[in-house]
Length: 449
Image (cartoon, rainbow, N blue to C red):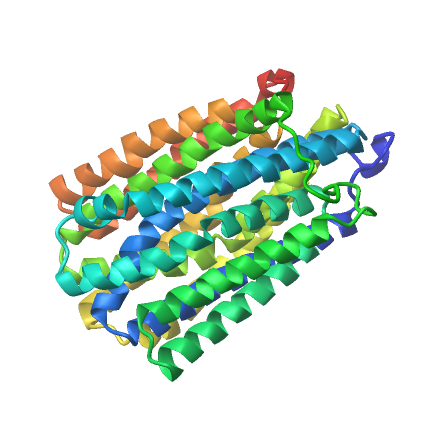
């Protein structure tokens, strides 16, 4: 299909790159700032690193819930925009903001009320100094839950409007506040974990305020009405949750699977733990283009589905997947060439360095060949409201391969941490096969919300 084949071309090639480029910058910034944060916290001491790591494992789970809810809102808003029903798109955005606010305040309250259970039971037996610092970090960062939830929701609405520049600029502001605040409070005022938590809270408050203020501009195709006049529209809320709940369950199970696999890796020894941690951090760079283009797919496909033009859905999905593969191949070739430098930066022992190189070389090859089909492509199905299929396949694959096969290869067949990474890529292959089969069919084209 050529762009001229359709009665109305929804996105030109230039439009696609205008959408994708800020998303790439935003993803790159988030990964790099996260890495910088971990380095600064490490300067406080091992207890601080452990405390932040434990609390963040819960925070990531919570953020994934709101990211899933935001995706649900973005799909609904995008489909209404595709139908040229801007009024319903605006009302959907309002419902997303309202549901996000109520749910996030509820979760924040639960975090404070359940603080004792989290510190004493969920985290298991931890050293007293780690518990004290985890308590400090938890008390401050939990206050930011409604703000990161609102930011995610507002950012998703802007992406649905194909305006990813706004989210990029807001993300830059947030990350600058976070890094500068960490440097000032950790190194300057010697505030320890509080010095890491306060900038996180401040950056999320400012991000949420900016995104909500910008969403109130009437000239936007999707905007929030002035004043607080939101009323519950259960039909729209149901549509948002139809996408958000399965996506949230999938994300939550994925995070749980990662935690279970980490427990297995810990049994392989210090070298394996270090190699796995470094590979996990660096792996985020390997999949960066596919991740950013996956976000773009939600915007593009939801608009095309809303317009009822499935020729354009398939055309743009194919086009974006080709771009994803091209970018993934290039970045992973560069990554393999840069491996000696990356390993040298970490100043690793020979055993850990060799293990890290083996894992990262293997994951680079698999990332370039398999990852886009297993994680980028299903976003096209989700944007077309086919979320339950994606959820079921992902959960089955995760428990069978990412977790089950990790124990078989890593523990019982003696492959260690490398076996865990092999199991993970088998998970990718399984997902890819079933997502390709689903996409090549037509059942997903008949799902309506």
